[in-house]
Length: 254
Image (cartoon, rainbow, N blue to C red; front, side):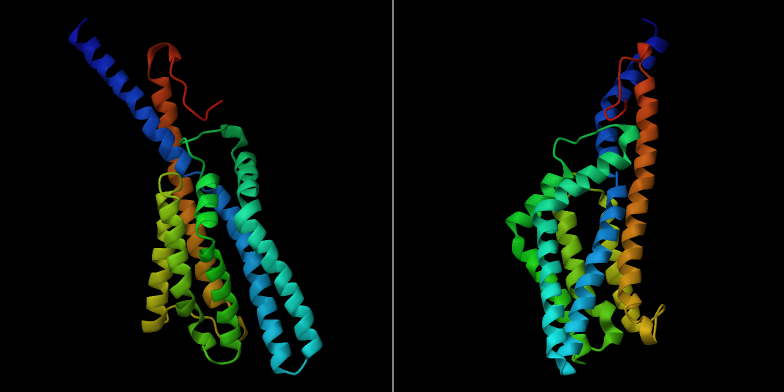
């Protein structure tokens, strides 16, 4: 075998060895389902926050019947949120993933994100309960004037950032590393808000001071992961095509 042929063979062997690494990177960064879950989160947040606000307002204003009814609806949405967090969310996310990436086929790192996410909630359910309690308490205390609504986003960072870091840590190895941008940017926004207030909605739009960075930074992190998954997929196609005869077929490609 000539020196040129040996070099070509070594390069092809190296390409083959790189395929599992790029399969993992591609699988970890299929983040479009994160966007779908952000929409579900937004609906849940608006439901829990809005009903908490209505309940507090009705109680303080003396509308006890309205307060009781809104409390029942609040309890119902909290039950649904518990079901989604601990039972139904994994299956819903899996179906969303299969639909969004149907054209690209299935790919696995050996452990599914749904299994890890479910374990994170079921082994430490107190985390989910504490998060929901913080949302309800935050809205209620804000309405009663204990926590100024102006500081809604910085205060929310006290419980949102730890939750996102917790989930990111539990999902390490199966979830996108880019999702750690989410708590980092949300926490930085809270600091800048206190020091400088570069972006602030006033009057009736105060709620956007939390929703915009929460959703915006989540979408930005998911977009970064999605772009990297495209890079990984392109690299996989190149690696799979490099061996002679096309014997190597990339995982996840049909």
